[in-house]
Image 1 (tube, helix red, strand yellow):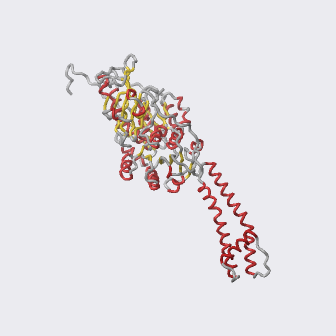
Image 2: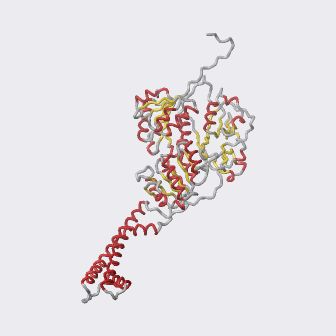
Image 3: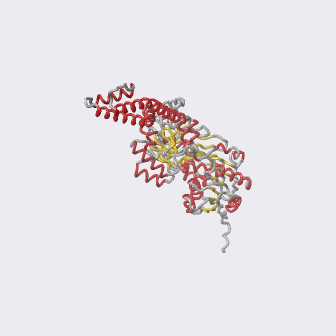
Length: 568
């Protein structure tokens, strides 16, 4: 091998890629592994139950991803996965208790390991909060605002960022000088243009002050009455047999009386039968045996009629009152949102809509679903049934509803329910939960169901950021996600050679704030030619690809030491 020429610079060894371990085999685990490998160049090992499961096969096909099959993540599985040399561990199983046990075991083995835990019931996470390197996230809570905003006809939730310095708003809700950045052009529904080059064209913006909006009314319980037709129908189903038998007896008695008395007309015979039944039969010594038997039967029927009718009505009323008490009797509602599926996502969506003052009717196949208790605590009407059946949606007053939000975990079931809803009401706003983006595009083209969201797609940026040691905030915009993140210009990073204008990349990244070395915040309108300096802090809004590129540019050169810092 030839020696390097004298005076030539010595190139540093290439930086070893970060290593990550993921435990889980569902859509979130798949997207997380894909994001860490393809966007951030990490080495990923996934511990899963089976390679042949629906997402197990997809995970196994990801290039550069190593799979380890284990019933649960234990010491042996962690050792095989090389957890001791990993930068972070993600526990994304759908079982909260299993995730807690796995997190505690991993912490005992490697106390300084960064751990990100997925939890449906965040109330169980109190013990994990005591671990300095552990973060608990709920994918349902992260994704729910996007479904809520879509249900009420907005492209993105209108809210303030966590630090309270910027707010998502419509351009018409703020003054022009209050606009920090144009986020997107959303006039074409779900076909949006994010971070447009012509910032003045964006109708969705980040503003420096909270936008003015009319004060919403205080949340009130749903006051729509129960339909008299529904209650009468329940009573009618129970008394129609009694009335049918009684009417049959009257008709039979009228025929007998008419035939036995040739001078009597049919109408007179029926009239006499009714009088004999309701008023009691008169004694007629000259009546034939057939006539006497008929009158006796009518008298007995008249005695039994009132108790039978009373029992049927009382039984129907009691059952209706029980249905009213548990919320299963559908109300006559209008302007409400129907939420189908009360799992981890549906429960958060129901709570979000309720907080906005929007009336909700919930539907789930199971009375034991995760969000049923929350719906009942909020006094939200609940229908236990199959939402893909027309009668179930009709019972939820679909014809007068504001929107149908379908949130089960199965794409095919969601599509079937949406199509049944559209068949009942062609102009219905439908919001679908779909995992597969290609499938969502096919649905849009074939059925004109243009509003779809993916829970894992909306939630995965927050999981990735925590695994990388960063904090960010996600802003869902239709089917896209924009990320607000902070980073520091590294001493010998690529950012140190750039200008402010280099961080204004249409469709990818846009600078929001620059904090100089003395701690002063420079406005977003700082000149393009202003050069970035090592140690300065920048806040940007970016797409997922744009943020991955920015983080690579902000990273120190390979000879710098990388530290793992616990989350606050």
